[in-house]
Length: 426
Ligand SMILES: [Zn+2]
Image 1 (cartoon, rainbow, N blue to C red):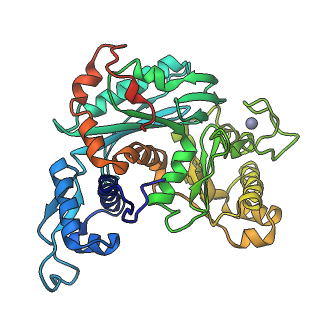
Image 2 (cartoon, rainbow, N blue to C red):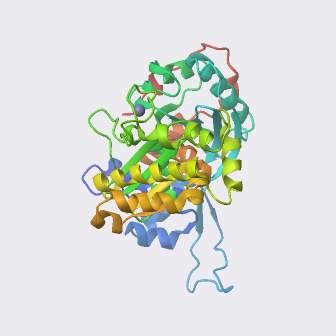
Image 3 (cartoon, rainbow, N blue to C red):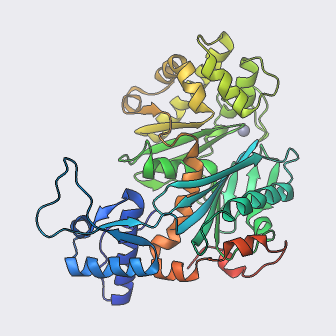
């Protein structure tokens, strides 16, 4: 998923150098500040090669070098001091977008993964694709206009609660938005003239990528992320690789059938997991009429003893988890979105139902946790996708980066500058 983090080998010297440049940058992007000496050890390359690679990244504006910092205990490392290298967070950035059924979130995220700035707004109630695209672009403009002049915008990564064809950003089906075959990437491009890469993906796929890279799934090779919102999305990492399926649509765990006598789902089926555990079900259990996300999360935080209705929601959360554990044998299941507030309240019921429904062997191996990235998993995952091109070939990506984003986003609607680059890079 990210650049392989070993020095390149092969006969094409230029390709090896490009690969190594990306690998050095990936270490710094994922782990923050490192000394040249630490990079030398990690990469298994000699000091002069690392010096040259770091020098090129400094020249490109991707990293900065500083005098060695004091180590814990106030001691400087022995021997010739090795310069510290860190990513240029404010100078190299991407935009990440979390398109929710109720709320739109946009963030500017710097190289290294720091959230530098945020904006949010309500998702247009009509859910019309054009209106949603317009609202997203408005938030992107707001964020980009505050970026430092001359800073490099590398790309935009968006998470959508639906089944997405990633190669062209077409949302095949998003039941809770009422979208069928919506060319969402194209709608966004028509509304801004940013000549940067645009990645549209499933929100939970981005969530699992983020938690696996920087959150509760770090160090585990089998991770499931469940994004509870109005619906339920699933993102799955199996043996350290994202589970995709033939069309990239795998992981629609919200449509596991958990109650054949349950409610009709927006997908057309009956008794899907998401109809039993997501916003409408929790709202009903809390006796809220069509509760808003913030309101429901607030109310859940205030619950001292869950009602019978809420305990039933918890039980269904565990019933679905049992199937997930039986099928995927994950080490970690991360409960994101609304489940961050639900799980602590109904943990006993959920884990009991998980115990009752899962086979003992895989059940013994799973940890059920809330995200370490809080509510930012989808945004951070969107950013990771948007940074992939940079980490694959820093020199090329930075030469093509948009350094005039403020002007570009302010351009008149339908002012396309370059559509060709808006698809997946070679
Ligand atoms: Zn369904």
